[in-house]
Amino acid sequence: MDYLKLILATVTLLLVGQGSAEAAEAYCLQRGDVITHVNTLDIHRVKDFWKAVKHSEQTMYLTVQTTNGSKKVLHVDLNQHKNGAIARFGADVGPNQLQGVKVTHVRRNSPATRCQAAN
Image 1 (cartoon, one colour):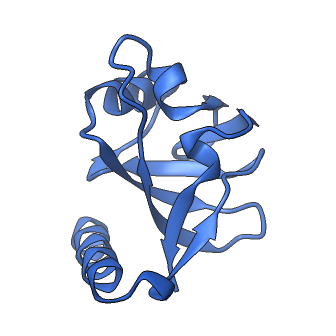
Image 2: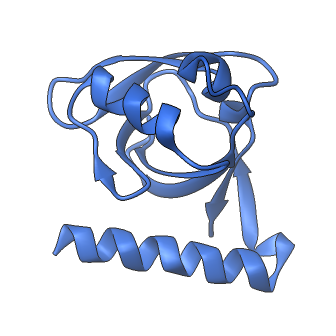
């Protein structure tokens, strides 16, 4: 059921983004945010996250539990660097006790600072 909700949220984000540029708000990933999904993949370990980033298309979709406790579905346009996933995304992550990976550092002017969230 959670998988279906993720797909519906992603489709909604796509439709909202196509309909109006002002419908999406900018969001900069922050230290302490927890990334639970990349595209439609559940993220359990740091290795899962980097593999998903490395193999993602130019636009990547994230489900994030923010530091204030809200859940956001984001999309981000990645750099073309296929050689290094860290350079491609611009944030470091570490293990999280429950689900997902925790953002530990966000590089300035990286794609991780230019995410778009649905309202």
